[in-house]
Length: 318
Image (cartoon, rainbow, N blue to C red; front, side):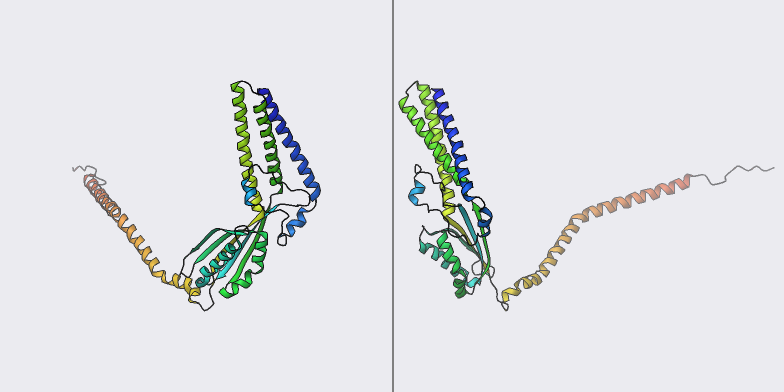
């Protein structure tokens, strides 16, 4: 029985290698020479040749794996980031307008991942809005973004587009998923048609459980990659915009000037703290130095008194 399990597993591993090689070779021949041209046109390459992932497909772990065939092209996940300068008084209203436009399109076209704003009512407020949206919704949003900023006295400050080619990963994951499903079918047939000892049956069930866990994990990874391709990432960052005559423009300089006195006070406090800590040691070292000097003076005077006078030989009289 163990030999049958090993044989079934070996056949499955061999088939996955053959299928990966065949699909990789087919994809390479169909798309050879197109990489450089496609990546130079990232900004214009909005449409993807990939069907959207429906909720039913994403939730069905036993559905057929999707791999790109002829005519589908590359599977690319796009990410967009826009920086917007807006007066702080209009920031919350603009963020709510963008969030409302996304929610009005429905979750199939756009949904909010996160939304935050800090410093409400302050001159240096900031906000962030992260969305997931279809390529069509993102294209329409980008085309009308700058016109939609005018009522809020805002302007587009920065724009960034990045992409990641997930074609190879999706092909590889799809093949691995298909092979594991075939292996699961063989193990189920082996368990059903070849009853044997209890130990052999338990070993087949353990192998079947391992394969099922790998199928579930692979399906989750594949669904996540397909979702990244079908729904782009869109991040909007809101920063304050000041007019040339606004008092907020001079606020950094005013804060720097007003901070001079506190800085001086802090520095003076540091000096006083240092002196207070060092003063006892200075006094103690001064006393020791004075005592040592006085003792040395006494020793010198005592030595002078005990020393014989110079040239003191005895004299005789006749």
